[in-house]
Image 1 (cartoon, helix red, strand yellow):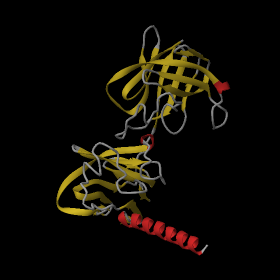
Image 2 (cartoon, rainbow, N blue to C red):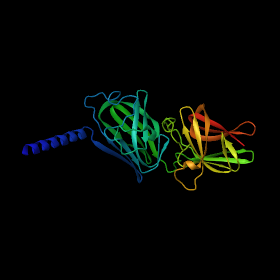
Image 3 (cartoon, rainbow, N blue to C red):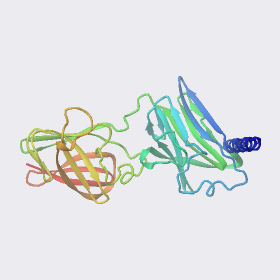
Image 4 (cartoon, rainbow, N blue to C red):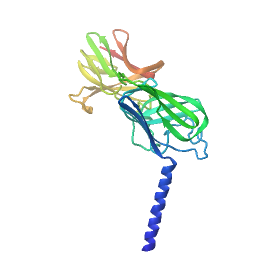
Length: 323
């Protein structure tokens, strides 16, 4: 029994020692910058070179990096910010990077609390380019700093080996909504048709198949439900609508977009299948130039018709709206 106890004790001691060594190899650290009464901070793991080639090897080119070690790197801001011109509402995020030989991208992701290998591109809030500098002196331990550049501004700086990458940020007391509301309207005979929707921006992200997954139900915009109201009977594609208010959702695929038109429910929450009026398949085409932000609009058709268009990034979809 004594021998067994000694063995277990030694095993636990060895496990604890190994865990401590692993922890010491990439210790956790935090950096803070206070601007007025507000603070921005980053919590991250700090690996060291330890004789390894870092850029292009340990940190591979063209692959998303956790920007540190072990747990995902977390960024918290108590103020609404603009990072390189991209709005960032106050809150907690994870920080990632995409290094390449041609430049680096910073990635702000909405998922938090995960291990550093659990990156979900669909949760990206924004991506933006960093400024890359070559260092003459080697930085042995990966470092993140937040130097101030003014009373309400600073830089987010990454340094390791002989590379420094940074991006500017500033406080913004009048930050614009990330997905502001907009509307579009048309008249078909005696019917007035209006669509109210939120318009998200690309913000450096891959949209189709990632931010908007294929073969999944999408709200067709952002935040609040996309609503269509008509004062008279109209047809959206092959779907006949009577005067009233409807919710527009959709199912995108790699080749098309199917618009799901449902009666507007009496209260917020999931929309039951019983309220579905019909499905209108919209024709896909390649946009002549990037559509940013997301947009829903009408164009003039033939014989008193209008054309409903939905577009974002490099794609647009269309269907007829008729009496």
